[in-house]
Image 1 (cartoon, helix red, strand yellow):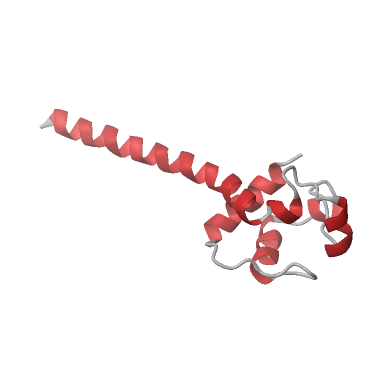
Image 2: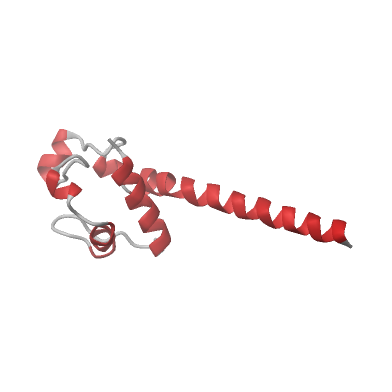
Length: 104
């Protein structure tokens, strides 16, 4: 009986760790799929897109001062020329925002 419980605990921990790794990777995957085309792979947009659409770099002081919640609101609701991004959960948006903020 003890061996069975131990096996179940180990299995539950393995699933929990796999879920944590999957969540950590989802921010990068979401960013690359939904954001990178305008915001650039390193958070620095192409000069033409930046000028045409007003996309700012991750290093821009105006972007740096935004909170995670403010950035999530921009993704959900849009702002200026950026249209809202549909079809993402709050968790996906947050993980993509955190990934973007981690770009240097």
